[in-house]
Length: 414
Ligand code: DSN
Image (cartoon, rainbow, N blue to C red; front, side, top):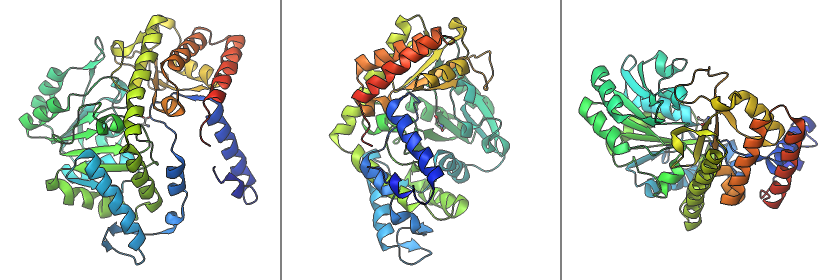
């Protein structure tokens, strides 16, 4: 159980909001593809007194005393990350995904260098060179697109752009790409133009570690990931890299960008990596894919436009243009029905980032809850019902009731 009762006498307002959030999670269906539910063990680790410690440096080389226990924990996290991902080197200290990517830039490129990444409106990440981010302010950012006709990366286009722009660093990775990344192809392109290759596998780390997605670790100079998405760990991040970059990556994280690591989070990462090494985790990841595919098929069956025609991973992107409902309107109506997802741009979107045409969904959280294909098809039907009747309170109320009933049958452990 959570220990929220301990908050109540000290801070009733935070207590009340935390209780309401617990109820929101229990009684609603979480479809945001980057969210998940941590285990009791992970929550206990991040809610522990490890948060009290300062430990600048790395195991065995700290700037403060009293780090004998923290050293054990950080070594465990590092060794588990190296073993699971078969990596030469692992750094488990980045505070989250954006700082991890910042460290990759700091280690492998210099300000003013050209860098290439997937454009944010086409499913990339802010830190892959989008114009409002440091990665476009301090580097000369070139953004490659998704082919709007296929919904896929066109590797010939990436290759041509790489040859024309001669980047120092090429990113592969996304926040809204439902298909497999050809990491070998990216590595070949990078090698051809003399660039470093970095893969950001935040969304798909679980699939990579269980062998359900091609592995970038053997071919990339650096691989970054958050630990709180499909990996089901705490909010944190890791960087894996080839031995030749180990010193540069470690120096970039500390002292280059960060001070003391968050030791309670490091403990949560160690625990989630232990959980990810168990056979049950592979079973879970297989179901994540099957569930996302059931979701995509059900949407197609209801006449929705599924970007790229389906999914190979945990994520489904639906273009609502043919339904004449903007993504934000759908998101808000679905919030009222207790189904949480996010409005998202789709490849070739004619609308803006603040008011995009699509919705983005994923199966990791619902799968943790125990949903299988039948439940996912039901979720797609509920979402379709609400999107097709965004102004109809009766439909929204009916769906909310059915969602609450189903959530009651699949309770979260807390
Ligand atoms: N915010 C994350 C996501 O939702 O995909 C990316 O960092």
